[in-house]
Image 1 (tube, rainbow, N blue to C red):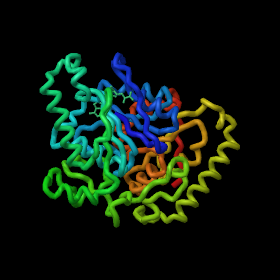
Image 2 (image 1 turned 135 degrees about the vertical axis):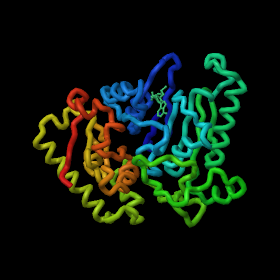
Image 3 (image 1 turned 180 degrees about the horizontal axis):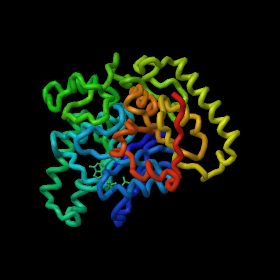
Image 4 (image 1 turned 30 degrees about the vertical axis):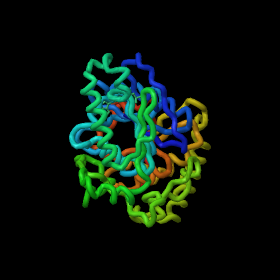
Length: 350
Ligand SMILES: C[S@@+](CC[C@H](N)C(=O)[O-])C[C@H]1O[C@@H](n2cnc3c(N)ncnc32)[C@H](O)[C@@H]1O
């Protein structure tokens, strides 16, 4: 599975079918095109994939679509992608697609390849009946429609849907088909051992049908330093636009200082995977954006967790984290052998 911040364009990786096991090949490809992707795989036989990805210098973490929400805020990713991830998208009242919908930005894309897509060509190789695959695809299409996603294209081995920019039309069109319902109370961003529920996370209200719910983000790279909509709308407790801008400037200054004292700082290939253990608004990552590194922004669940939405609105990536129970979500190796993996953690004063 993978999710990506795109720089405004959408790209696909062409997966070679003969590769039996892959993780983050897509992420690696996108990274070379200045698109930052988060790949995740479960902590089972797949754990080594996450380790490989990190060793390649590609963002990845342990993560699983099972019963808990993914550890990301609502409206975080511009694109989500599953290639032969074999997640049962059609089961449990569409629960897993409903979760993808929660984390996708308004107007975000969902890309699916592998079973059941293009079953007419591959059904024999997949050792499943045509009827079974057709029923699975129809069930997926029905869930996508119930989320008001628009099918953009199905061509060759992939299918692409788009989440609506707001729920104005969706609320009206879903009056007849009430399932799944909109969630009523649940905090859309809460995602630390929060159970997934078969209800649609409502998008922020809009005043007209063309408005992007929650506010449009600027194109990359302006997006990195522009005041994120969540801040300008006052939804991040205690963070004003001015405070945000000051934080950006402060981190630029700090990074200039690091550059002065760490003489290998700018050496290409020396540093690659950077872990910010208390990322707040992602200021450190933003100040590092022009260097050949990427930063995993962790927002401790005890901190102002609405800040992680800001990190994503800036076009950066990260996760909620609780270092006490953290072993479940970050690769054990990332925690215990940071040197071997070339991960350098930076803990900033709060
Ligand atoms: C064939 S690989 C896809 C490759 C990957 N997108 C890439 O960039 O190369 C399928 C991936 O889905 C992941 N996966 C399978 N079941 C999953 C689940 N329930 N939750 C999250 N990821 C899952 C696997 O660990 C594997 O990494």
